[in-house]
Length: 314
Ligand SMILES: Cc1ncc(COP(=O)(O)O)c(C=O)c1O
Image 1 (tube, protein in one colour):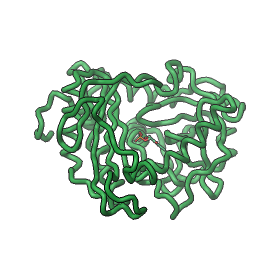
Image 2 (tube, protein in one colour):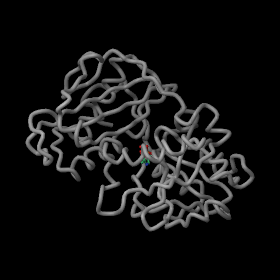
Image 3 (cartoon, helix red, strand yellow):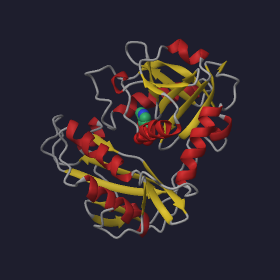
Image 4 (cartoon, protein in one colour):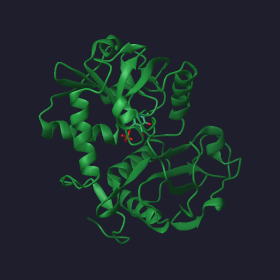
């Protein structure tokens, strides 16, 4: 997916040109993947562009930094304001926003506590992650031969760059074998998540999703779907999911900022349910997208308009 550059990138509180957002090859992050980041979407609504759950994303970034003892000199509120600013100055409507905090240049020792943290935030146009038809038609996926990280190895509650080497292995293998995405099991053999998505499984009217202890990233879209289910009276259970449950489920869908809510139509070439999007998936998509496009009220204040001036709180 080639990136279409925008004009400005936010760096440590200042706006710089897209082409000037460069780091030295001996920056700590290059050798050791010592970075934490976020991915957010800004949607075009009838009240102008608005960022989805910006505070929750920025709080997760603050949490990720804390887990790694990475000095992050900004609060979630300050990072949220920076996100609005970067969309505004680049005059974007719908776009993707990528904040990243990394260990910079000065000392290449593994510990990294002595090097300065550099914080960047960029935005650019981004379409449907799993392809334009994925939302309606669903995607064909496989179970990966790679597991998600074992507990006490790399912390999966942190959205850290290093975790995405594991994601790369999962995704590359899936693509090499003709699938759109791979689902990783945890090291106990239970279902964990996609390379960049959480997973929900519907069986007999109940929705199941792996708990945080199954090596998943605590997704913001995952929590959004859980909240919508409470309102829509769809029972949700966070529990360990055996692999074989995927083959006999009625419906399965991925959630994620990039993938939004995307149905799965087959796993390992076995049809999921009838092989097309099911009613629970569709009902949740309808509710989700109607809040995002403003046709239903944003009753949880999930959308923050980018026109809100810097420093303003909701
Ligand atoms: C590994 C992984 N799991 C789950 C998710 C979904 O999280 P969210 O809904 O916060 O985007 C992502 C995407 O960020 C991810 O990279």
